[in-house]
Amino acid sequence: MNAPIRYAEALLTGMLGTFGLDIEYVRAEKNTLYYLDEDGAEVPVLDLIGGWGSLMLGHNHPEIVSYAKELLDTGWPTHSQHSSHPVADQVGAALNQIIGRELPGAEPYTITFANSGAEGIETAVKHCEFDRVLRLKTLFEEIEWNADVALKAVLGGSAALPDDTSLLPGEVPAPTTIEEFGALLGAVAEHNIARAGTSPVFFALERAFHGKLVGSLQFTFNPIFRAAFASLGPAVNFVPPNDAEAFESAVAAHRVTVLDVQVVDGKVTLVERDLPVIAGLIVEPIQGEGGIHALTAEFAARIRQICDTVQCPIVVDEIQSGMGRTGKFLASSHIGLLGDYFVLGKSLGGGIAKSSVILIRQSRYRPEFELVHSSTFAKDGFSTAIARRTIEILEADDGAAYDRAAERGERILGMLRELAAEFPDVVVDVRGKGLLIGVEFADQSQASSPVIREKARAGLLVFQLGSYLELAHHIRTGPTASVPTMLRIEPSIHISDQEIEQMRTGLTEVCRILRHQDALPLVYP
Ligand code: PMP
Image (cartoon, rainbow, N blue to C red; front, side, top):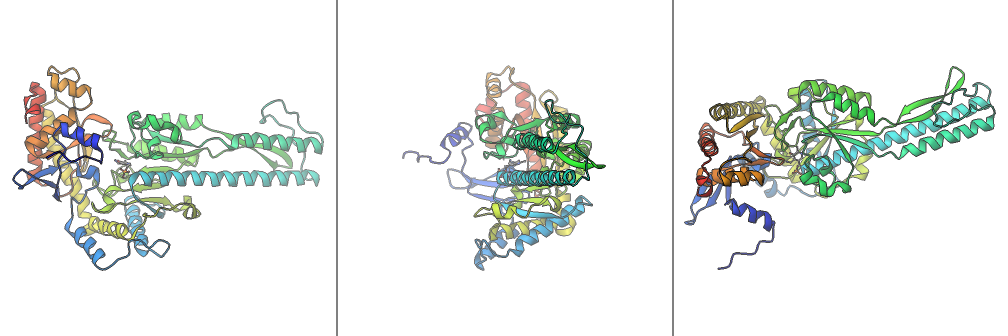
């Protein structure tokens, strides 16, 4: 019989096939995916990819599955747009309670729903720009008002004409008549209008990953993903993580001012005002796809200060690091990073639904946004109810799930550190927090084994190792999106001691293979 034609991602599936990874899984529970062998018997595979981070509670968590069934069986409305959604408010209330607990002093956040992580980022970015444009509008209204006040004051004789015009570019003489003052106001308006259209300036961090849609992609650092589409979105300024001075200088370099005409001590005076050009900074508290790198508490405090002085909102992308994965609900809580926005996704859907949320600090929130932004599926009844239940499960028993993520994570990290100590020639680093972990292997592009060397040069070594782990040890793993030498480990909180030992056995073999440059098991697992 001919093989069926593939219509969906045939190239990618074909590539996976060359590594023996084009496996069809037919059942899933906790950290296990099952496929069928030739005799139709189920073969369990330990899943360390965990839906690339969407499975904090594992595959098909029984409580979420039975709640989903209940919602469907009872005819719970999934699509009832433009109506009251108390469940969405309950999700907002629960998340606010958590933020208040983990980041004491935080003001309330409004909640906006989206469908995926990338969409959540784009919604946040869109709101940042909306807020900036409205701030711009307010500034120009104030400037117009002040010019009017100044003109009336001069005409009424309560203010003297300005005698210093040096803030205007070019040699503009100080006005001596009301006509000349009118011309000066015209020159100021022209100067301001020329600057009003300055494009917004967004900042993100080097190594960042914020999604792959045309907008969110601009904030994703890796040029492999971004370069071809760079003209489709805003030019983002990437600054090095944990280098507050670099960020401060970049912010200063983008400062743009306009001129205001104010009456000061009875004299019309030209005053510089900052144009709201800086639109936002986006950060992951622990970079996931960029190779598991944490921001420091010092950097978090400094960017908060710098952003406050220029009114730049901080968007904290907790899509991968949030939902308890690092041992607290928000990874930001470890470093006291108070975002103006928090974006959550992935595990928010309990491993079943697709949902993301954007939490926006109320003092920055623009309610008019609700009139210009929507999506058919966002805030749908099913996903929103599942999100509420997922948060309830995480919060149950005083947040036992977070403690478990921390404890399991330490156990895995401990095992991996032992491995790194045994194979320092092979394992460069083991890092992470809670269940967001990466193992970085030494560069093998000069390896003596041709198989290992060629795969490393093609950036595919981790796929080859993953293939071996899958076929020989029934362990499913993969790289992070931007670090081809890193194996990512993001299991659910259900990971057992036995599964950690299974991981140890598989990874020990991988280290032996690399140490001895013995590629045979890679080719014939
Ligand atoms: N932000 C971060 C930090 C992510 O890790 C990801 C996905 N890996 C995204 C955004 C994009 O999320 P999604 O794939 O749901 O669009």
